Length: 141
Image (cartoon, rainbow, N blue to C red; front, side, top):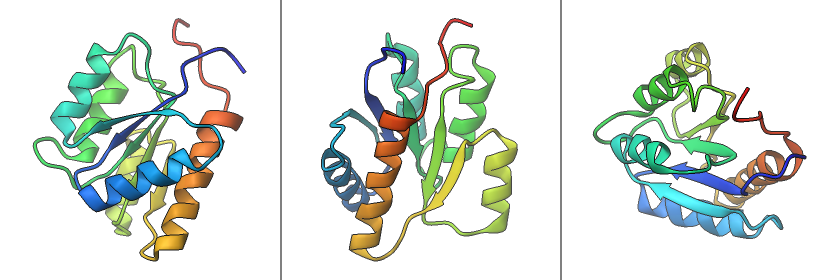
């Protein structure tokens, strides 16, 4: 694996989901730095300001200011972020949301489990895969 910062950007406006996601990521044995944006506008500003991009963005769809699909659209149109892995992590199971997420270049679509234990387990698996297993794209190709 190439040497890159172990960062995850969580874009989540629900405080309960934010806390549970952070808690679960910290228990996944890779201990990434977790950056949080609570709306789409904040997420895009943060990505623009970061010197080193995160290894993955966990993106909710239902966000204030700019929704998740708008964030994903802008990530894919910017040269610097076009290869940045984005996992849509949302409560929506709507076929339209799933199809549009993939059409816009989402790397994965994961519906948030309702049950606490299943939610925590899903987050741990996502963290382990994207931080420990996945080989990130070189930023400058």
